[in-house]
Image (cartoon, rainbow, N blue to C red):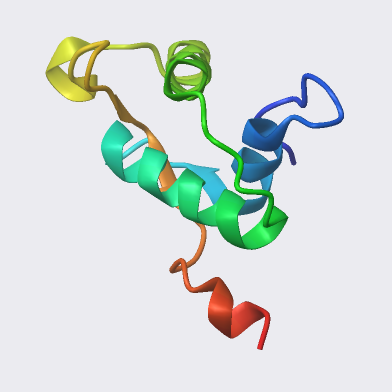
Length: 99
């Protein structure tokens, strides 16, 4: 089941959510880690040197968080440095996947 609906054909954030992330009601992942993971995924999967829009990524992650679990400062940090109830589906080593 898709955890985030695609907004348009080139919705890389939606694609990344659905391929690489799972909801995790018990644990959070810091935004900086998700941002780094997303950039690595873009570089390897799409090989287009796509510059990420950090604000757009953060907005989508926070919107997901609010709709799925709510946003509590004690658990999810601040809007500037959010922590999201998401886990990475697999260790990120796409070199192994494509070799």
